[in-house]
Amino acid sequence: EKPIRLVLGRILTKNNHEYLEASNALEARAILKNQKFDVVFSDVEMPGESGIDLVKFILSEYPETAVIMATVLNEPEIANQVIDYGIYGYIIKPLDPSQILIMLSNALHRRELEIENKSYRQQLELLVEKRTQELAATVMHLESTEISLRESEEKFRSISTYAKDAI
Image (cartoon, rainbow, N blue to C red; front, side, top):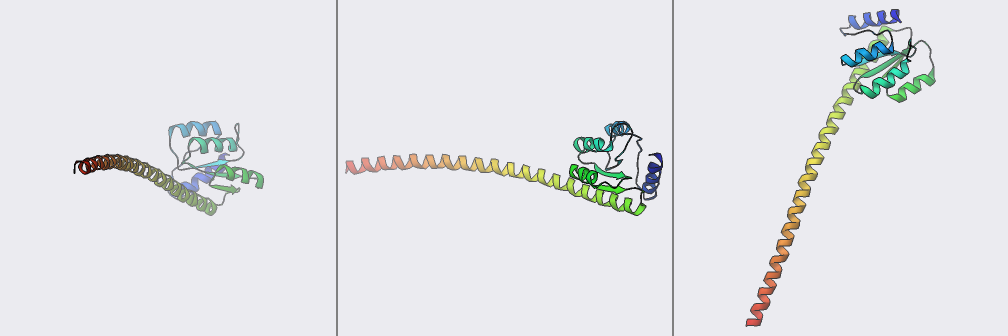
């Protein structure tokens, strides 16, 4: 809704956040294709495609984008459904500037933590892979050394047996 987008835009601008508007899901998809966003505010009810379908799309195609949903209806079933999808917040209209800013701050913080956690896990996986390769190389070296040791022991026994027989 245009009035809601205007209010949200004023709140964001006043608090030094940049934003772009989309009047429907199709327009939002086109904008998302061309630019990266930290957070998307979406209404549950939208012209054309539903906000819920848009949220599913955003969360699957742009997993590092936080999504906050807004709706005029306080419907726990819908709230639970979109929270299960992975949205970062759910706001009941009319929009309260303090609530918007708190929700935005929390979403940005959670998003940052999730990105850091993902990066840490990737680094940890690489380290585990490297250590596993080093361990495999060490095991191969130990096995090779063990074979050489056995061969040396067999030669020593042969020489000892030959020496005993010679004496």
